[in-house]
Length: 203
Picture (cartoon, rainbow, N blue to C red):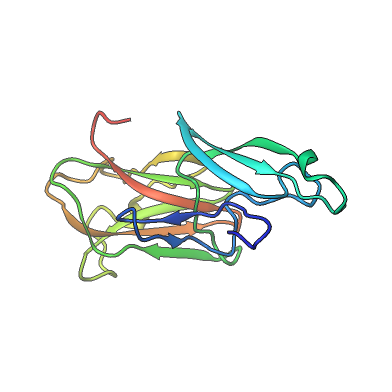
């Protein structure tokens, strides 16, 4: 975001590469530091590099000084590197501690075939996340064997927690239409980043 003198880096998404919407536009993806620091001025974004489970964002930055008498040729120009875990730009977190949080997707249609379900989440030590599958047209109706109560609790921090139920560790090949429901009993520090499908043999 450019204010006439400085610019930080913010996250925007697009489905066609031409029209973009900002994600939490009031929050910088990479924030500027206080005046005088090497990264207090104008940011120039470069490349996002994925290395295993790490995403590194490289960018250039100049410094802005409080002292207006500092010659322009003495301003700093540096290269920066911001690092985060892969696929963790945006998350959902509980609003209140000590209360169960519930999330349900819109109706989904998945390709035919045997699929596993994985959850990208970072949970506090005592937090528990359970996942269920419900009828696409009747959200309150869990599919037999795939209720949240049937799910083995998900704990800890992982980019791909496997979802397992008492009688299954995958979604049946003939099940293509459903909603995903998630029940989280945890803390406000918990973060749910995403849910993905995985075919057997994928990593």
